[in-house]
Length: 183
Image (cartoon, rainbow, N blue to C red; front, top):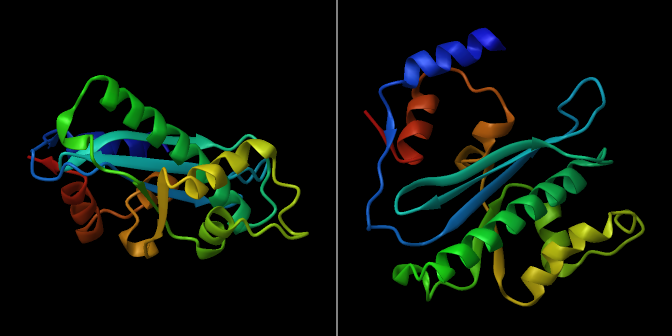
């Protein structure tokens, strides 16, 4: 793993994030690798927030509980991303970043349709009633129209980069370009 990290740093040391005033929409992408940790079977969740044409915030973190399904892991990942999305939106509003003042609801992309349904429709069934109360925060954000959860195909999910190893090549180059990095 250390060698892979070193190669990544070596490969991307000439890249930098490049911002512009072209895209003033705050958007987040969320993804989770279900049961990715082989030792304790906890999932790894990640998100990327984009603004002004480049990444402004990103995070990758092991979830604190074991998810019983992909949908549950993705739902918890969406919740983690939504909390950061709301925090960043509040901070930018407090700083009075004018181009952002009119964009509501905020957009959060995810690639698992079952987790999106759980957030949007509150699919409370016997299979989901065990999910911790703190994750129902996301349902409330969707219900009050503060966050719009939107499906995105896995191959277009920017946060996929944070939860799975990607081979060097065209896909890596595309990802770097989409994240707003340039040489």
